[in-house]
Length: 189
Image (cartoon, rainbow, N blue to C red; front, top):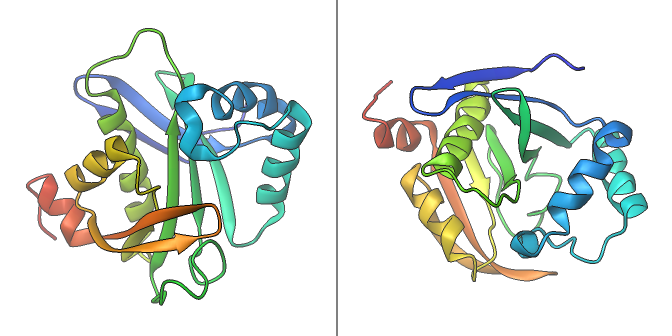
């Protein structure tokens, strides 16, 4: 098992950690997550197991894109991708600045939702991204129809810049600076 790269403790929900995705070992688990009906905005609904493994192998080889498996108290529970918006996803759409980092996240489907869990996940993701002093701003491009993630993004400090047309969706291009994130937590730098 790979050692986590980042760990935080949520006072109500326990330990959250992230480790790099192992495409071969994690493909079956991730296939179940990304093809689940609740993951419709992940845009992998029709992928078979081989396609999921191929996609995460491609990400692992990409110098501008990383995928991380998120654990909750040691159990796989979420997925996070980090990318360089100057080279992936938003090229020609977003004028990336030094210190910009792109992000996607997905919580695993569950039959027993836990109140506050997804908020704890996005907080963990943001803390990991901002743990790197080179990160000054996080950029996201969620589907314009994904109202649940818009609310979560706003809760951790994201502001919608504009709606953009991407090849697979209309998206709310949104950004969150370190200071905006800290302000949602009642902290300052």
